[in-house]
Each structure stands twice: as structure tokens, then as C-alpha cells.
Image (cartoon, rainbow, N blue to C red):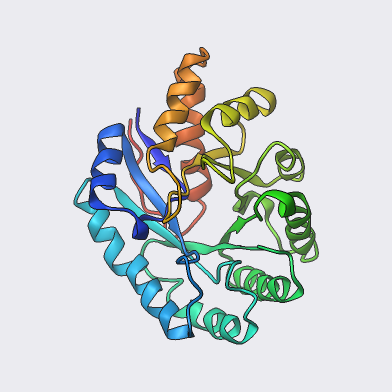
Length: 270
């Protein structure tokens, strides 16, 4: 079965990972801008990173028959530094119209501080001014519910928000209902320590259905698995779900959401 990983940090993965993903059926990846494992010292570090996502990573993926797309933004972890954040947000329009750039992301909250919220407001406003899609990072563990609610409230504050063009990622059992009920797309991240396992993701699909839900690996420099989506497919099959439902979650839904971006040029498989 072909699948799309709509959130994976390929800059931190090896070419061996790309080969393994291609062999497992991956046909496209989407890489959001994120924290590099340490706080960068200035805006020019972000410029080089954005160039890596736009110029280099698509070439690496293409060597294995995988299409590479990206989101660009100031990540939640470094958004506490308002001075750098303002410069990075001002830099974004230089890149947002480049081929393969789908919109602004992953943006959101980490510790739900006032500075993080201010950086987030700037990026939401830029996205709505431009008519771009958005991908949101919700906090880990104890801040998950509060941070998700804060993000939804910030989006609700601007009447221009088109909820069908926004994905709230890293949803878990305690947050996915409000995301779906309020008309957003929901991402479930298959991450071994601070997100959901494939088994828990199947539980969620069984409870809420497959509409407006995507699963992703978010594989990065920490404990993570670039083959998490195929493992989700395996667990869905073990529980007797039909192939159409599985395909909807791992392929059709990402296509439907991403096709709303003017820079998503992808020929769907038959």
C-alpha cells in the first residue's frame, strides 16, 4: 500500500531511512520546520535551515522515488526568544512561495508562555494575510490540553480562519475530540515516548472514525521511528480493518488536505 508521511523531519534522518521508507511504500513526505535539538543563535541559522528544506532535502528524497514537501515557520521551542522570532517571521515570505513549500508550520506552543503566544499570533496573522495553510504543534504531555485549547482560541479570534485548511497535530485521546468537533484536521503522531503508539492510534480511529484524521511519524533526532506509519498499517490489518479505511487514513486524507496548497503538485497513485 502506498502511503504519505505528512510530518517527518528528514533532515535528521539518514539515506538508509529513505530507502527503507520507499521499500515500505512511502511515496511522499512532508517536513515541517522544527527545533534542531538546540537553540539557534540568530536568524541566519534559520535561513540556512530553510534553504536545506527547500533546496537539498527534495533532492535526497528524489533519489529514492519519494516526493518531498515542507512547511516553514518559527517552531514553538525557540519561539520564547521574541527578538529572533520577529526576524524569522519577517524572513518567511522570502521562502513561502518556493516550490514545494505548503504553508506555515509547524507552529504552536511548547510551554504556553506569553512570548510563545505572541510569536504564534504573528505567524497566524502572516498565514491568514497570505492565504496559506497552517500546521500546528501542540505541547507535550502535561501541557497538551491547555496548549491545544489556547491554539484553538487564537484561531477562533480571527474570522478569516478556514478550519478546513488547518491541521492540529500531535492529537491524543484527550484533545482529538475538540479538534474534530470544531472542524479542523487532526494529526496523530506515532512517537514512542511523548505521543501515541500505533496501537493507541488504531484505538482512536476505532472511536472517532477516519474522517479528517492523518497519522505521521514525526521522526526526528530523538527516539522515533521513520517506519511508524507502516507499523500503524500493520496494526490496522491485525484488527481486521478493511484496506479502504486504512488507505483513507494514510494516503487519501493527506492528499485531500495537502491538495489545498497551491504548491502541492502531486500525481496520485491509482
